[in-house]
Image (cartoon, rainbow, N blue to C red; front, side, top):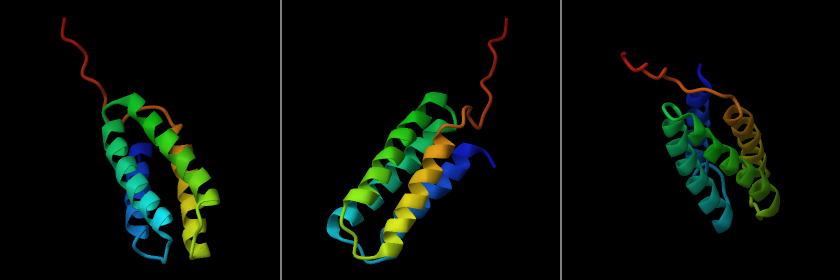
Length: 105
């Protein structure tokens, strides 16, 4: 499975996991917003190689936020940490899902 597809799956998981466990308001907002933005940039990264760097920044933000924001559930914190690390690693994999069409001479 290409890295962008896995990143999309993780982003969607993060979005839906915002509703799965009890969270504080800042943690809830952060999880669904980062999940939604990461999903958008994962789809963009399928055709534009540099769009993956937006997910690098979002995953770094998620990693810091998981450690700093108050949480009601330790499961939510560990979920955010695991997703952040996986998204960060996947965003560093170069390439896109589709090959660019070469100009016809």
